[in-house]
Length: 319
Image (cartoon, rainbow, N blue to C red; front, side):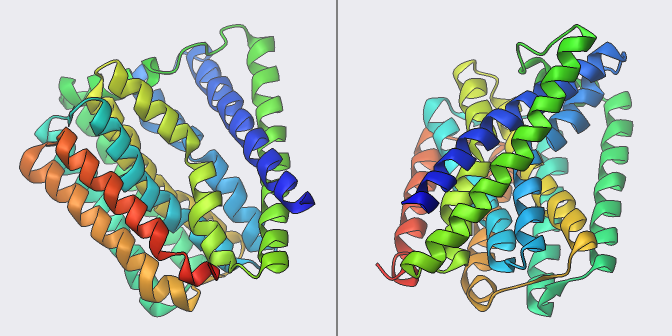
C-alpha cells in the first residue's frame, strides 16, 4: 500500500512540478525577450518532456532499464494512440502539409533510429551524443524554416501562446522554476520508488509498469495541452505538440540519459513494444502525410487501438 501511495503522490508532484517548471521557463524566456516562435520550438518542447526526462534518468541511475526505456516507449505509444485519439474525438485534427511533412518525417526518423538501437540491444553514450546532435540540427533547421515560412513561424508562436498564466515578474519566475525543479526531482524519486516497490511486491514486470502507469503519468502534460488546444480548435498546435513530444522523448530523453548511464533493452520491449510504437508512428505519419489530419472516426480507432494494447499487457503483468 505504501508503494502505491508513493506512486500516486509522485505522479501528482511530478505533474505540478512539470507545469511550474514549464511556466517558469516560458516566463523567463519572455522576460529575456526571446521570440514566441523560439519559445514554442524549444522551451515548450523541452518543458513538456521534463517529467519523462527526470523519471528516465532516475530509473537508469537505479539500474532499472526496463522502467527507463519503457517510460519513453510507453509515452510515445500513449501520445500517438491515446492523446491524439482524444484530441481528434474532441475536434478533427488538421495541420498544414509542410509542417506535417517536416514533423512527421522527423518523428518517423527518430523512431526508426530507436528501433535500430533496440535491435542492437543498447544505447551507449556515443549513441546519445548522436541523438542529441540530431535534435539540435532538427531544431536549427526548423528555426531557419520559421524565418522563411510565416505559417511555420505562426505554428510555434501559437504553441507558446497556448501556455496561459506564465509569470511575468522575475521573482515569481524564479520561484516557479525552483519549485518546479524540486517537484520534478521529488516526484520522480517517489514515482520510481513506488513503481519498483509495486513490481517487487506484486510480481509485475518493471517494463509493464513503465509502459503503462509511469508512461501515462509522465504524458499528462501533453494530454492536457492537446485536449485544451483541440477544444479551442487550435488543432495544428495539438498535432505539433504531440509529434514534437515524440521526437524529444527519443532524441532528447534517451539521448541525454544514455550519456549519463548505459541503457539496455529488456527482451519483451525488444520483441513487442518497440514494434507497437513503430506501427503507431507509421499510422500517424501516414495520416499526416496523405490526409494532413486525423478525423473523429480515425481518432476513435486510435483509442480502440490503445485500449487493445493495454489489454494485451495483462498476461505480461500476471493478470
